Length: 171
Image (tube, rainbow, N blue to C red; front, side, top):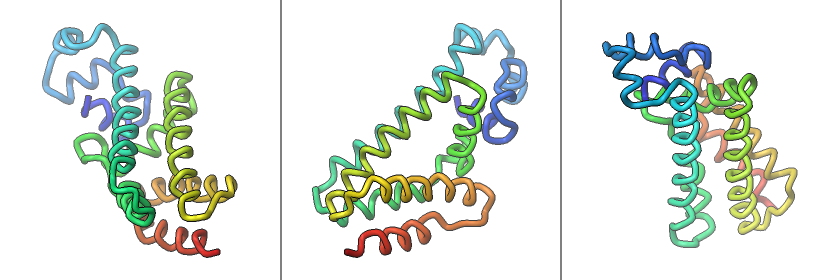
């Protein structure tokens, strides 16, 4: 699975190919098919893995003490943290969005993740008195753009989100 994410983040969705994955792992195509029925089932598992990881992150933050500022701090910390390098690191988020531009299954998963994140962000911002849906979209859009900039090494997601949230949380 990690090899699939590394291929996606380094060379795009067309790099997720059985031959290339097996070669990069020093394995045979047969070993791939021992674990997966076919390439589409492998891609589905990648998408499910990403979706489930995002959902788990949100559940973890939700389970924290309902202190409003603590949840917001945890959300920023989580947003600033990248996936492990063996799963593509900082470039996973932009790569998933790129994949969604050409693959309906990837688009469905990215839309689902966006829905989960937006609902959670709306709840957290609503808890601090910022219930404007446009602000929720502004903050989430900033996160998406910041992940792309951070993948290129030109942004600090943590500092930028903290600055933006200072602005939007003022009465």
